[in-house]
Image 1 (cartoon, rainbow, N blue to C red):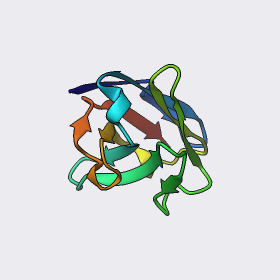
Image 2 (cartoon, rainbow, N blue to C red):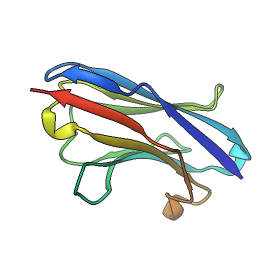
Image 3 (cartoon, helix red, strand yellow):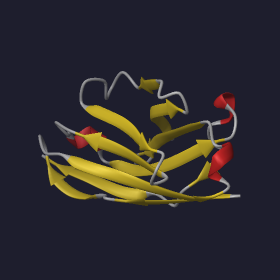
Length: 118
């Protein structure tokens, strides 16, 4: 089993920045992909960014150029640096991981709230 705990959410004004963190514990040696999803009120959960064990990254078009995903293997941590935040970025952000590249979503954190005011 893998446990994921997010932190770093909060309230920020439009144009501001936040850095989300995800602390991973348990059988993390088998994890080959990690990522961030978000879910806004009344909307479906959407993929924000992913990073593989080989450091290959992928981003949703809506966050390209503004968000950066990174991974600190030594500290078993995943990060999401969010810059130039917009009100439409308001959502609960979830950290997720998978043992296989095509199985992102096998493990989930509890989520952290990000609210961007206009």
